[in-house]
Each structure stands twice: as structure tokens, then as C-alpha cells.
Amino acid sequence: MNIFLEGKPYKDNQVVANLGAEAPVYKDGKLQTMTTSWDIFNHVHGVAVDPDDGSLYVGQWKAKQTYPFKLIKV
Image (cartoon, rainbow, N blue to C red):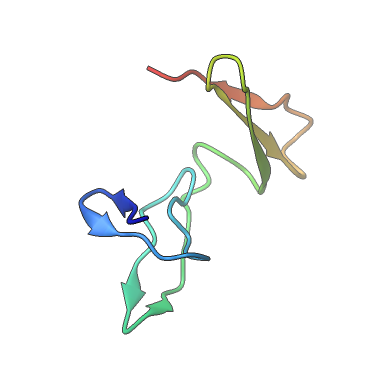
């Protein structure tokens, strides 16, 4: 099966999103250093998918005791 993300072929074990920051960049098959501005998320620790509606729950670590974010599928 071929999977495409934003029109580009997706390979197993590749980072496909960098929540709260710029998209991941690969050069010669190697992931480049990723950074964030810290204005949206702080220390994203995990993402869970709601099987009923496809929403994403984003958990954070050391994020000033904030609750997980719920990102609603649109």
C-alpha cells in the first residue's frame, strides 16, 4: 500500500507532524532538528485518537498543570 502525506510518499517510522511547530524536514532521509516556539503546546507527551469521532487528545508534561487539549476533527 502506498501512503501519501501532503502529496509526498510516506515511509514507515517517519515523523509526520510536529505539534505546535513547523513540519518535520528530512534531508537525504535524515530527520533534521525540530524546534518549537512554545506558544501552543508545552512538552507534548502523547496523542490519543477518539475512535468514535476521530478527535485527538494531546497530553502535555510539565505544562503548568493544564488539562489535555482536545483537537476536533473538521
